[in-house]
Length: 102
Image (cartoon, rainbow, N blue to C red; front, side, top):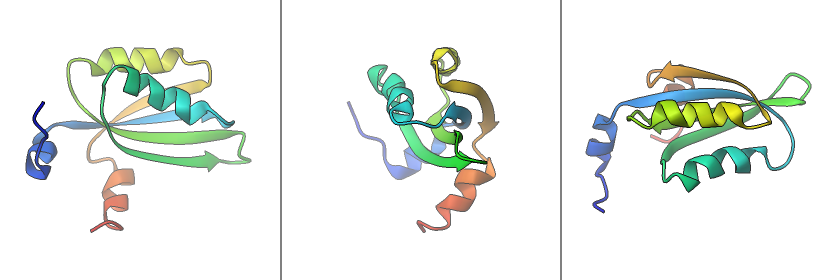
């Protein structure tokens, strides 16, 4: 399989998935493992606890392709996932975070 150059990768349409999850050990592993088992690349991950820390919010930057709808359905079925929201690639969480890496 050919690896994509940075320019080619940026040309792909991206989507930001925002997940509200129960905050305990193993939740991130379950979410990311779901993508990994299906060979679905995650371009970026950001996780922060929310409020008292009983829940966390996970933002995933993923490529937009024909498998994404099915991936979202699978994520929604995970026991510790409370909610899933989709945003466009321009969602500020990754746009602002990118400033730290440039």
